[in-house]
Length: 203
Image (tube, rainbow, N blue to C red; front, side, top):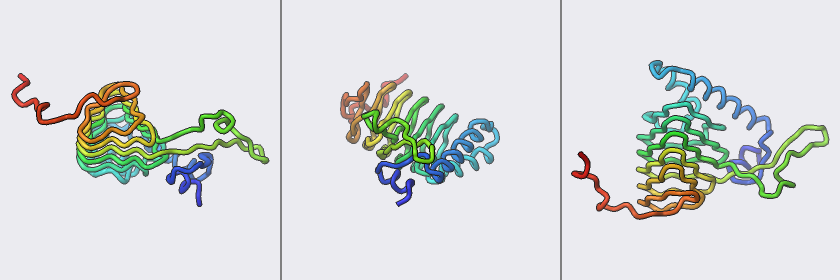
């Protein structure tokens, strides 16, 4: 099994593997090109984004700047929007549903590290090369979600359909469908129902 296969499977893997290192370099270069291209240059910007994230819907819009580790392991449905400073460490797959809105400074972090420093710290091979051991857990965000500004979602979390995650939250556990959840750690405040319809309540 390759290091990439181990990584995507959630097993321990070596991120210094040449294939993975090259994939990250390619993604980081594409992020740089995308972030430095004017929104007025729509076709060129779209070309960079499609190469960076080939598995997101063509109607997606990412404001930029965007920062990802690989990009190829991010999947998003139609109507996907992400605001400034969207950061994704996609060492495991990140699945985003249809009509999901992402606020500024949101981070989706699949990457995990051992708790014990003896396992986490840099190691040295017999030939003198340095390496580390890491693992990752996938993230899933359901349809029709709003992830507000400065939210961090940790690896292994599933956010259900129709959820709102309040600004500044750190999501460490699963959130069921149709919930408003806020805080650090993120906790469910209420279930979103028809009673929350704002029709007629705004001026």
